Length: 472
Ligand code: NAD
Ligand code: UGA
Image 1: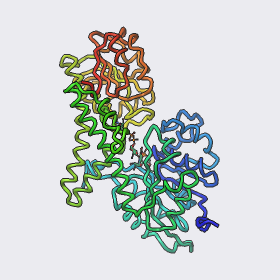
Image 2 (image 1 turned 90 degrees about the horizontal axis):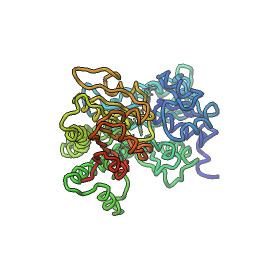
Image 3 (image 1 turned 90 degrees about the vertical axis):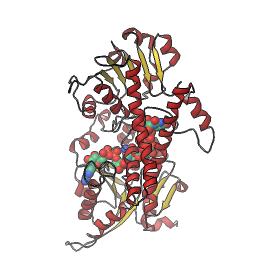
Image 4 (image 1 turned 30 degrees about the vertical axis):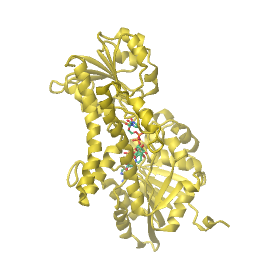
């Protein structure tokens, strides 16, 4: 008999939040644990409808390989529903995978995480759970949030009106997947982190992951280390991007080449080659939010220098995006008013339809302020999303600012344009037919490659002027 056979078997999981994390994570758990019923719930009816769509190309999250996993499990042991209370009542384990964006008003606005959705979902669990329930923080949270979740649950613990009893264990199990590689990251994680003080609950959760993750990659820590490790992991990754982007600017001023510098420093195993790709700055829903949260926590604990240090990582990121917009204007004779600019890529990285904090938003907004006419093409981002991110409908001009229109492919986007800007590294942008493109553009024409994906000799050979990030 193994020591784990004494653990109560998990038959049913509920995940609150059917977003970029909840959806893919639960799909992989359902795939790897066919004996467990997994229900992903959300308040957003249209999101749940999209998860249940028979046309798998219409899932709300675009992620390579996700459709195959969902097709295998949906209706078998993976369910998407808006019946939050029912799913909580039937669950042995409840994951909280709701959004935790930066607060926009009140105390800590602009830095602290907005915990209203975490609190609301914890209260729902407190109200609806039955028997003993393991509550797992999957959202990224400020360190010591588990104390809040525990306090809400404690208030509901004990006898229930129907004569039953309810009790809870709280664990922290942050998610490290990156969008675009979520399925790969979930199926073969570098590590799974579980923080808690109820050792049996930790092993129950570990037993789920042990269905496919080697035990030595399942790290057990206390609650606070687990919560803080998630913010720290993102801060360290983002810091590398701001570091290399600062060096890219020096390269441009000195005729050094940032890719050569990346290769040279990345060959030192203490530094390593990953996350040294210079670009338009980091986007995505997490890096900026999580670093700002660390800044807020640092100030809360009176650590001003620590706060200023991490804040500078975010400041350098915004600077990089404004720098790119400025240099486009400068190269185009100091004005882009009325000029057509082709924008290739709007998502914050390739292989996702997510545009949250995408560098393209800040760069396009600066160019619209300068009066440009943008023709935007992204293979997975819908027109309505771009309009919402830019705060301006297609074709509309606001206060003498520029305008934008969606393009359905690269050729439509570049037709009549003075410049092409590559802002997302979609694979199709690495193999563009520059000779054909050049013919469609107004001369002198420019290519601004913020993602180092252009075949530079081919673009130059087609008579185009080229700027590529970090190439002096
Ligand atoms: P998301 O906005 O895509 O999804 C969150 C979902 O929760 C939404 O659909 C929302 O309607 C739902 N929700 C909110 N409150 C609810 C409630 N009370 N009941 C039911 N549903 C509710 O967010 P996401 O990108 O999946 O991120 C979720 C968390 O995971 C965040 O804390 C984030 O920082 C963290 N995280 C995200 C990523 C990523 O790559 N996106 C990676 C690791 C960690
Ligand atoms: C990031 C982390 O990589 C995940 O581990 C973490 O779980 C997640 O945040 C989160 O907490 O949400 P994600 O934001 O999905 O994942 O994507 P990344 O691959 O990290 O890219 C973030 C941004 O950095 C993108 O805009 C990307 O283009 C940029 N980047 C990345 C660079 O500019 N250079 C690089 O070398 C790597």
